Structure formats: C-alpha cells, structure tokens
Image 1: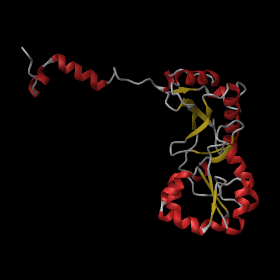
Image 2: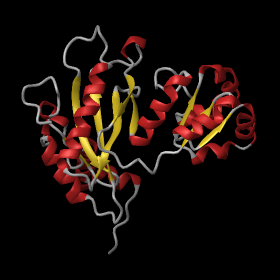
Image 3: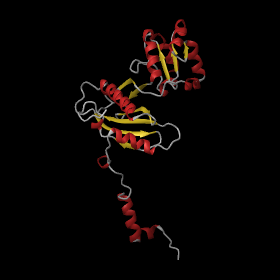
Length: 263
C-alpha cells in the first residue's frame, strides 16, 4: 500500500526523522573549505583552464585575487591601470573622446573612434544606447562639467573619465593613452570584499605570453599597494576561463615579492 505522510507521521517516523536530522546538519552537502582545495602553480592552472575550455571560440582567461585590504577605508582602495605586453584587444577597443571641437581632427588622427563635445553629450543624454558601442571613454579636464550631465549613464558602465583610472587627461597625454588602450590597457579596482578581477589573455595565448601578462599586472598591482598596509598583500588567487570552474593558484608561485615566483 502507498504510504501516506502527514505532519504527525513525519514526527513519529524514526526513519524520516533521522533523514531530516542529517539534512539539518548538512554533512552530505558540505562544501570543501579553502584549506581543502588543491593549490596549483600558475602553469598548472593555465593547463587546467585550457583542458576545461570547450567553447569553440577563444575564451578569456581571468585572474581573481583576494587582497589584504579593507576598501571601506579610503586609503586602502586599490585602483589603477596596466598595459599588458601581449593582448588581443588591438581590434576590439573602441574609444570615444570628449574634448573641445578645435582638437577633434587631431584626436581622430591619434586613433580615437569618435570625438565630440557638448553636441555628443546631448545626443547620449537623449539616447543612452549610443555609449554601448564603445569600450572606453576619455576626456580632457575642461569637459568634466559637461560630462556630469551624463554621469548616471557613464558611471554604471565604468566609463566616467576620472583621474584615478587615467582617463581624465590633458591634451598632451591623449595620444599616449589612446595607444595604450589600443594595445590592451586594462583597468582594475578592488570590490567591497577586497577582490580584483582582471583578464590576462586568451586560451590561445602561449604559457609564456600569459605569464608575462600576469607578471605585468601584479607589478602594477604592487605599485598601488597601500603604504600603511601590514602583513601579506596577496592572500588568495585563482584562474578561470569564460565558462570554466576556478582553479586555486598558489600565491607563492605568482607573487613577485616571493623567491618562489615562477613568472
């Protein structure tokens, strides 16, 4: 006969009660702690990401770092830019530049995809989807008051020009910044948990190319290390592909301040 389960039968049944007790403890569903995870060196982690990358396209390899900082304190906010020596962004970066109309032709000659002033800002304010076709926005300081009208559009996309990200710059530095962006300059910033995410290359890159990118990124990261920070700077690290799981990386194999660094 088919058993009937009621509230009373669930309480009275020792078998069901034991099952509920185990579910409450959660021993069968317990996730491994960080101490139990396997640590790989950088090159081992890269090989594992490649092995698990089944996408027909060329997936991106991302690094996720946990820093020994508390971003709630202003002096411990880690933020900066880095130009990777090996990049595939040459044809993928699209730059919109905001500056006075007298410099538009010169800026386009330097490589900006679109250059505008107040008229372009007004167009973006009317149709915010215009900004979706660009990956980077730069501006000269004289345009910052005008850009505040579209701050709520650029801000959430991380495209509001500012001094810390090196996108609010004088005219004589515009050419250099455009060149860096076209070569694959990346911006990094720690989140509320002290974590930083950055793309260091593609699965198709050689091990040496990925190692060079990783080393350049970590050196730029150490340049932004808070001066009053005590203890170890780099706590945890992992590599992952676009659609793969993460693989924990031994920080001693990538930390440029460690003797055991492999980069």
